[in-house]
Length: 392
Image 1 (tube, rainbow, N blue to C red):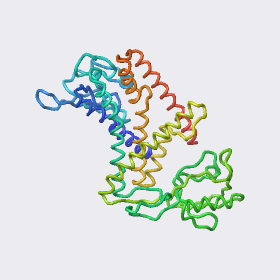
Image 2: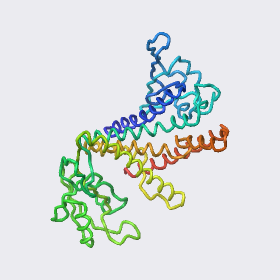
Image 3: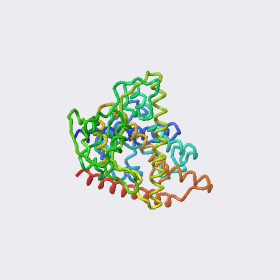
Image 4: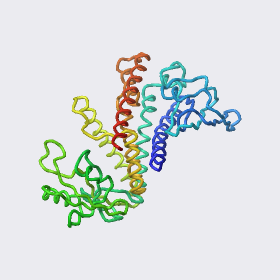
C-alpha cells in the first residue's frame, strides 16, 4: 500500500506539471482552454470563475465527461458550456489532463482554436509539457543538492561537493537469472564484505570477484539494518563474456550536497545531461528493436516503476527525489519522440504541414494517432505483464 500511494502521488505530480505546461502556453497563445482536470473522469466536482461577477462557481457531479472521451481526445461540447476554464477534480487520481479548443483539428477557422494558430505557436504549446518536466527535474535536483543527494563517486569527487556520509558500495541493478539474483541479493543491498575481506569500493569488489571466480563466495550485505549472508559462485552471465561474475551493477554511493548558489545550477546541469543520456538510451533501444535485435536494456512498465519508486522511498528522501527527477526526464523524452499519439508525433504532423504547405487531412492524422495509441497500450500491457510475472 505504501508503494502504491507513493507511486500515485509521484505520477500525479509528473503528469500535472506536464499538463500545466500545455495549459499556460495555450492560454498565453490566445487559445481557449475548456478544462484543466486533476485526475481522470468521472468528475467529482469542479470550479470556474464567472467573468461577469468575478465569483467562483462550483459544479457538482460528473456532467457529460467520461474517461473514454478524455483519453480519445473527443471534444465533448455539450459539457463545455462554462463561461471560463473549469478546474475539475476527478475520481481517478492518475495525473491530469487539459482540453484545448480545436486540439484535434476542429474549429480551425475560429481565432481561439488550437488549429487556427500559427505553426510555431502550436509547437510551443505541444513542447511546453516536455519543457515543464525538464524544469521540474532541475528544481528537484537543485533542492536535492542543497539537502544532500545520492551520487556515485566511482568517477571521482567534485571539489566543491560536501560529502555528507562515507561512500557505500550499493547494488544498483541485478541481471536477470544471474548468480546474485538466484542467491537472493536485491536492489539497494549494501555490500559489507566478501569472505573475510571488507569491501570499501566497487572497483575493489570487482577485482576480488575476478580473482576468485572459481569458487563459492560468502557475500555479506546490509539490508534495512539487518546483516545477511549469501553464498554465490560467479558464472558467465551473458554469452560472449570472458569473465565469470555475480551479475550485479555496483555504485560507490554517498550523499553529497553543495552550497545553495552552486546547487541551483548543478541541478539544472544534471537535468540537462540526464535528459540527453535518457534520449540516447531510447535511441538505441528503438534502433535495436527495429533491427530485430531485441531489448538491449531492461524495460519496466507501471508495475516495475512502482516497485522502483517504493524501493527508493525506503532508502530515504534523497533517493526518492533522485528517482522522481529521473522519471520526470523519462516522461519528457518519451513525449518528445516523433511517435503518433504523443506530443512529438503531433509536432511531426505540424512540420509535415509546413513542408507540403497544406494541412495533413484530419482523418489520416487521427488514424495515425489512434494506431500509435493502440501500439503504446499493447507495449504497456506486455511490459506490465512481464513485470507482474517478475514479482513472483
